Image 1 (cartoon, helix red, strand yellow):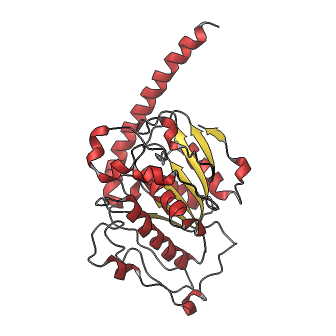
Image 2 (tube, helix red, strand yellow):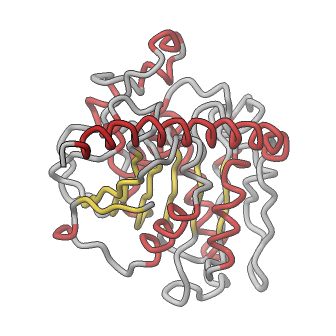
Image 3 (cartoon, helix red, strand yellow):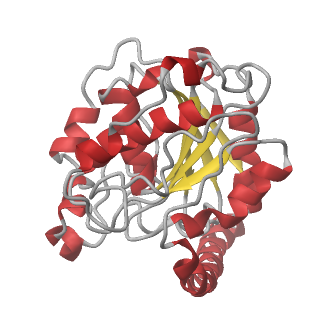
Length: 305
């Protein structure tokens, strides 16, 4: 029996080494895929629906597009007329809500290639990935522009609410929109993967970047998200890993807020970059998004992998 603590001590470095090797392999693969995700996704109108505003051809402004626009408000303002809305397909209530995927810091939509394929193979009809610009310097502004994209997404798909999956910084942007900008009217479920909800202390030298400073513990953004959020309707599901080396401490990737309907899913032996491509995590995401309703009483901690 005395040997068990020693064996546990040996097991963790082994798991850490395995996760690190996997992270490096995923990084190499992602670097190869990265050029395929630089441009915004091309969107096609659903059969029988008007084309509507296209996020790929309508420049959404400097925070959520590869190139800045001199007048982002004028580019984002077009919307479907009431007569156009009436012709949208009656998908509401007949299918899973559309899913919008939002990547992390200095990344792009190519990180979601496997997760997107998994969702489409298991019955999700509308899955899109959104790029925000590497020039983004303010999380709040990115959240505002995310909201505009979601409005257009709803117009195009005929749904009144959507589900979001955000990796790392993408999850924090999505949470800010849902919690602080009234986005809970549009966002049914938000799934976050390795998102620093409580702020992360990793890589202090990177604090020169404004977005990194906003992801620090006790930053203005983190403090704002800690404020009361009564009647927020969005359900939050947080996947966090015990071996996520970018979340310091690891538990910062969980939401600890008395007003929010949230639950945490612990992932064992998976690094930060692996979260969007891990099969067990993908299955957990499908389960979370497929649930009809997540009640406040279900908040707690579960485990995968």
